[in-house]
Length: 400
Image (cartoon, rainbow, N blue to C red; front, side, top):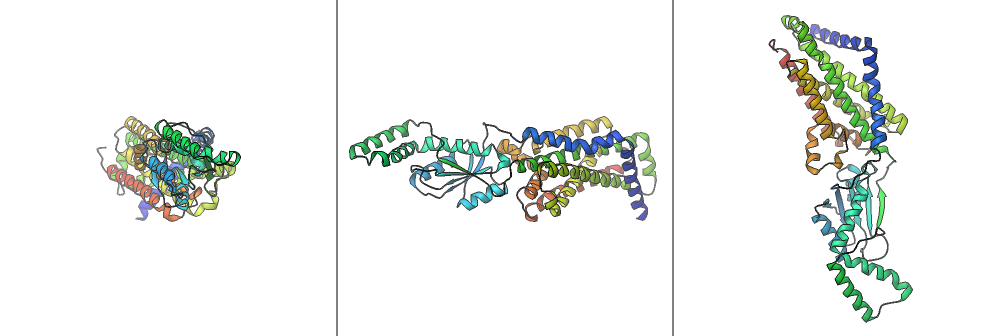
């Protein structure tokens, strides 16, 4: 057992020395990730879009006939994924936890003066708030166009006096016509509230820090895992297989090194995020550490497992590039997942990127506890362990 441990540590030391001696690779490995992170955060901090289907929570606190019509129209609308919430506190909680993109509280009858609609927004999903307002305007125009007319008449009553019976009848007739031919709705019905603790750009930066971290961890791990092909081509693997310990300690040593490399990359990214943007990584160190370790384990194990499935370096390079790009695109490293169709958002949970990004946002932005991230730790660790087991099993086959 001690010999196996010594071999694993020796392999880890060899890989570290190889990286140290190649100064250009050393610089690219640890300085490119924070540089790309800065570029991504600058480009995507103001992401916007119009043709989206936001997920929103709707709470009807007014309970009037008009408010119920608007809420029902939103729940049936194909342009939004709406769900009901019991009250404003539940809406705020769902937005804060990331369960929905935005929230809508109908706090008064839409036909009365004031701003009856309150949009609860998460600054990390800047597009969601204006989209929620637009979808609510559409629902109001379609389901309760007469409300706007009554609202306008009520606002003029203090200046012009109460309506006569004949005037009221004409208003009702006009309202009936509006129900048949809905007009455009103005935006003076809406108020906005950002979730508690929101800082400008903070959630967006936390998002892209996690997105870039897992992206570069996988890229770097794939490059490190390709050394298995070099050893096989040089005959080193055959000589090791002929020995007592076999290739097992070599694979373990590579796994430990790649995990440590991903951890250092993540530390560099989040140091830059904290210094430049004020992301509170140090303040959440207790949960940041296991999250980063789980991400490193996942990237190392997944890379070794994928490379072990290939017979040549070219195969491994093609497969690793394809897998990394697909996982990054679907998992949210290329663009925020909430901008994607609902089916693609669900598919994203089959990628490590979605779990890593969500865990970092939960820790650094939502101030969530261990209950919000332990599932991500388990999933990432399981993927890494499965990849390591595959690499260990295939490394024992001398025909590969």
